[in-house]
Image 1 (cartoon, one colour):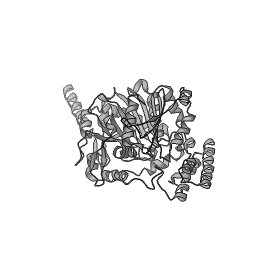
Image 2 (cartoon, one colour; image 1 turned 90 degrees about the vertical axis):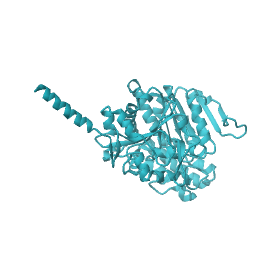
Image 3 (tube, one colour; image 1 turned 180 degrees about the horizontal axis):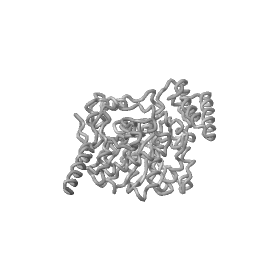
Image 4 (cartoon, rainbow, N blue to C red; image 1 turned 30 degrees about the vertical axis):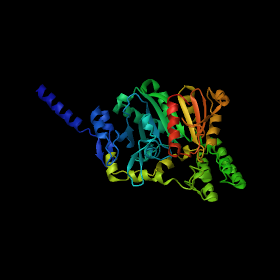
Length: 450
């Protein structure tokens, strides 16, 4: 009788174990159940990506559940290097609400999308330097989703929490990469996301087993109220006249006043009215007729940056990357839930990272408006860290690309573990506008040669 009971229990256990599956349903490939069950080989096999009619590059994608109660699932796409000794890097897009697949296809990933929606290999892919992990986040961004209103993040603490859970599962799925150096990279609103997860990893450094070495942020919004200073930029490049610049400076004064009084929603609407016009009429667009605030030389966004969403909308592609019937979300709900976050600062977290000797790179496209070089220069002057005085006295170096004797690519200022690079000829999306320069910059950063 005892043996029969044991046999029955074994059969029941095997039944339930066999029914722990990664779901390829309309929600996409949910890998967390298999990861939690220890069925790692099966999860990895299920996550393997084979894109139709594309250069074959090894990659894996699927969903990691970061909050079971709210049904919050983050989409990831991982490109492991053939060189097992290279660092792992995480790419986070900004927005808020912009998918990291934008950076993958338009800036740094192994592929770029052509006008006929075919893929070609990128010449200066950052995947030559790193094993790269792209995550659409927060939940509601890109292919990531949440089933509950409570699943939308409202601040950067929640961003760090969800990304930490995703990274913990990622390294369980790919444990061979855990010992390698780890870098966090991103641009624009990821100026908040990157310090958020880096600071969380610093807090968990004794238990996470993740070997964080540094961060790199391009044209990043770290401290909104401090950095929303556009009028002088626009006046100097001739997009504002004297009177318009005076009007803009008056709005900027109100932005900083609202931030001091912690009227975060008022602060958001003031800066939105001044430039972006996402939720209110844009003063900038009204007086210039220009909608593109990512590059002072362009009126509208480059057409090649529109191809990736069209490529990802194809049914065969979505099947290959395991997203079910989901399409790229506009990110509007993510944006709306973070309105009170825009003007707030993550500078204290950035300062902790700098004071604890993590390598930190900030870089700016010289043609950017929305988080222009002067915005970042202003931020840097406010950072309180142990090397602040040394940085202020450091020489700014003229930067020419390797092998170039005449053309100046930009300028580099470094002191100990902190580096600031201005890239000429680039706007907000530096790797898109100056791919060779961006590749050399990130290579030198990792090699400690800036």
